[in-house]
Every structure is written in C-alpha cells, then in structure tokens.
Length: 593
Image (tube, rainbow, N blue to C red; front, top):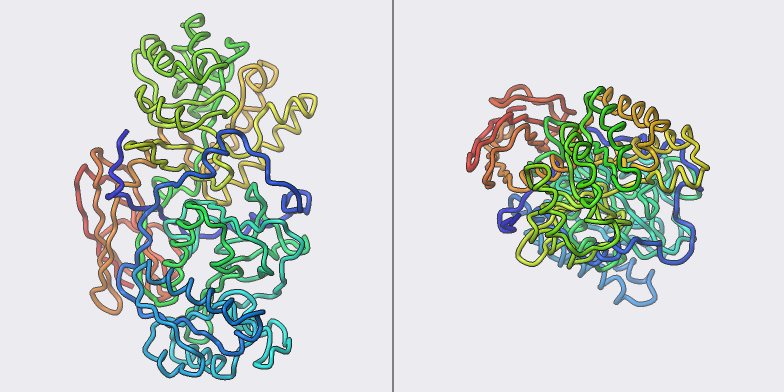
C-alpha cells in the first residue's frame, strides 16, 4: 500500500475535550514513579525510534510573532545563555511553521506592537516592561503564548506566587511537578490546540520544574507512560499541561513545559511542531480546518481482536456471540491451524474480518506462506497481521507489505491511542495500537477472575474513549473465547454497542479509514469578518464516506448558516459532515457566523 507523503494531510478534532480522563484517579494508576526505563515489547522498541507520517505543521497564512527576551528572566538562570537558548528555540520553531518570528528584548517592546502574537517563554522573573506588554495585549486583543513559571517572581527575582498564571489561564490551582524521573504529556482528542495531533499523543519531557494546572481546559495533561493522568501531588484534576483561555480581549495559550525540555526524537518533534502551529493560530485568531479522527463525527473507535491459536475451535463461540449482537469481530488466525479447521475459519470471515497470526505462532518468517494459505482458504487476501507476542521489526513490516498486507496490530510504545502511518522503505504500513491489558495479563494473573477482567476491560475502554482514540480489546481463543468466558465478551460488546458515539469496526476498516483520511486536504479562506470558505480535496484513489471537517473559527461565535451539513458544535467551532467525497473530488463549503 503505497502512500504519497507529499499529499499527506490531516488529523482533526471533534468538539469537546473530555474531563473524565482525570476523574477518580489514584497515585497507583499514574505510573510516574521514579524508576528504570519503562518495559517495552520488542515491537515497541522498534516503534519508539520510528517517525510517523503527520500532517504538515504549517500555518494557513503568515503571522507576525515577537518572542520576548526578558532582561530580568536572564538573571534567574545560572547563565543568561540558558534563556537565550530557550528564546532561540521558540524562534526556530515559529519560523518552521511559517510564522514571521523575531526576538525582542524587554527594553524594546515598542517594536512588538505590530506583532499579532507575543511569546513569553520560561520567564520566572519579569520586568515591569513585560508585565505592561501583557496588559496592553489584553486591552487590544494581541495574542499571548506563555510558558513555564512565567511571572512567579518580580523584576528582582523575589518570589511572588502564581497570580499572573492564574489570571492568564483562569486556573483554580497551580503546582510544580516534583520527583519524576520523566515527565509525560498526553494530548487528548478535542480542543483547538490538538488539531491534526493523533488522539492521545504522548510527548516525553525531561524533568525541569514543569507546571500543572487545575480548572483550566485540558488541551494536554501530565500523564504516566501508559497515558493515564498523573496529577501533581496525586491531587485529582491537577494535571493540566497545556491550555487555552481568554484574558480580557487577548487569546492566551499556556504551556506548562518548555520546548527545550522535550526529548529529541522524531515523534516528539512532530507532535510539538503541530502544537506550536495550533497555539499560534488560536492565539492569532486564524481559522484552522482539519478532518476529525473518525467517520461521521464519532468520538472514538473500538476493535474486538481475537488471537486464534490454541484451542482454535473456541473462536466460533465468540464469533457467534458477536454476530448475534451485531458487532463485527477481527480474528487473527494461525494459518497452519486454520488449514486444519477450514469450516471454522471460513465462518469467522462471516463474523467480520480474518487476518494472520503467522503460520505457526512461533516464527516471524513465512509471511508469504501465511498470506498464500489464507488467500486460498478464504478466497480473498488478508490485510492484517498480528505478530505473536508483539515481536516485530522493520523486516517484519517490510515482509508483510511485500506479501500484500496493509496493516499490523501491535504495541506502539504507548505513544498514542491512534493508528499510525509508518514509512517502510518506499511504502507505508498502518500500525493499529494495542492499548490496555489483554486477557493473558488479566485472566492468568487474576486466577481467571471473569468479573475483574470485565471491569478492567471496561476501564481501559473508558480511558481510550476519553482520549478519542481506538480501543483494541485483545483476547485469545484459549482464554476469553472459551465457552464459559464468552458471556464477559458479550456484555462488553453490548456496552460498546450502546454507546452511539463510538464506531465499532474491524481492524481493516480502521486501517482503511486512516489511510483514506490522510489523503484529504483542507484549505481555509476568509471572505469577510464573519464568513469563510473551506475547500476539501480527496487526493486518494478511492472515495471517502462520512468525513467530518472541523473548523476553528476566529471568533467565539455560533455558526448561523452553511451550505454544508452542520453537526453540533461549541461556539467558535464549525463541524461539517461530507457524506461522500469521490476520488479526486474537491468541494468548497461556506460558513457564516
């Protein structure tokens, strides 16, 4: 499955940022205690160093931005060079997204009057001049981006508290993160700052007195390695890492961490570049249009994936139950056993999708052979591979693509709860993440306690759903698919089916959607102070059904009319459903507020 990276765009965001991800947490769930490097499956180790294909992090139009170098802040650090490094990093990041960026000393802030956005990075000590510039920005509606412990000290570097941060963000409490060997920031799906960012994307940050907020909108949260919220001092909801707010007439974006502290790997760089672009666009009141993550405006997706290996015949119990409920299943079969259970294997295809779990569950080679055997058995090629024990490498990925496969389901280093497009040579492989525990971890370790297993699966689903990603319920033919355990699976499937905001799909459907979505381009043009046009283009070779374009408007107003089909949205947001977008088709939609 070749994907032209030059046409890659997209990743959108639906309307509401879910606060529930931070409710009812305990320190035991947070996963942020000091200790060694987090344990990784071999596949995760490979993915950890790989880039993923992202939408271009470019502003839709040029924005003038002034990065303030505060003279008092320079005295806070051991050397003024530390502040200079931070300031230059912001200028470089802003230039990379297409902004017209300059560094302005606090003594020359009159030069910054024409800038659309002021950036005040990591300036604990602030001169009177910078504080006055913030007040002028609030009065005239100049955008503000503020990071770190800004303004917690006066011009003489005497501590004065978090009053400025509370005023700018509306937070009810502000705290410094302490005693963490690594800081993780997760970006839930929703809100203007997550446009084009994969749902639940995790950023790894070196510890450096990062700030946590409570009460402000959570555009990103401080989290553990597994993306569970990790609030400061274990205090529920005190985990905000990134937020947007309005201070008088100014749009404000606050970062509780600093660019220079982000671990320098391709994934982190790409996510942060999008966050910088989104921060500037929102602060400058520039509209952005993106394609939402899931078709028809769904909030999340669910895949029920069974590894059909030992006790192969059990697979039919799960398949029959899911068919009766009306929920599709995905069955990754060992092709050697499928040849010995031909009737059951063909029946699984009627219950959803069949993929490969390799030929014999022991070797990662022979991918051509497993594809050939399953194609002969089922009458159609299979597109998905589930590597045994999530052991895979680049050779596995390349081998599966060469065998005619398109996607792989496995661990992705817990770096997001979204599918990824991974470049493999000249081709592209879709990786669908397995998030949360499977029945091997749950049923074996809990003496096969079905009730505890059901509770944990439900909790994992709620967590991924709140992040806006795809929840993969991973289970096995010899465990949850056993006749006595299938009622647990059935109850979970009914719970998922009752949630009409969730897309229940096969893994192949999710992979196909993610591929098609990545080929949709959007472009926004302002036509007046209360009207814009959005052009949507399908650069793919197949039609796209149910795409939803989300537009962040330049004003917190409600849409009054459009020539597209509008979905429910908050003020300042337009969501337009495009039922069908043909191959190569382009459509322009007008929106008036």
